[in-house]
Image 1 (cartoon, rainbow, N blue to C red):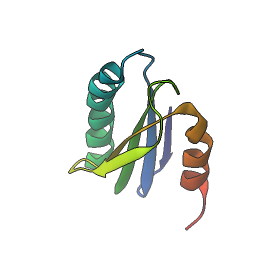
Image 2 (cartoon, rainbow, N blue to C red):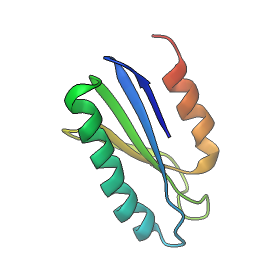
Image 3 (spheres, rainbow, N blue to C red):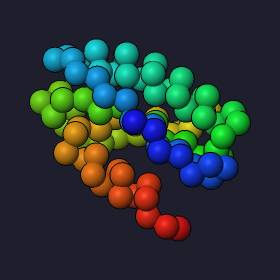
Image 4 (spheres, rainbow, N blue to C red):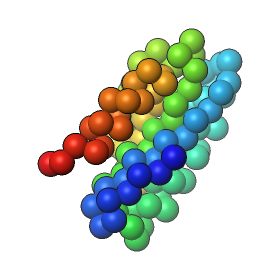
Length: 90
């Protein structure tokens, strides 16, 4: 899923269903960084690309700033809050 405020910011959500954290982290991270890099080059100034994994595997939301943008991982129950934060007017 991709939400964009053109010229401002984007939220890219990549869902990965793996039973091991390594699958969510490795494959999801690659996708998230790719999305962030593509979005930050021409479309927006700020990107948050987050990988959503199964609640049994991903216990909490965490993120790190990278050259491409902010990259994170989150359980599905936190997605509503991430969307609300993005949609909130500054």
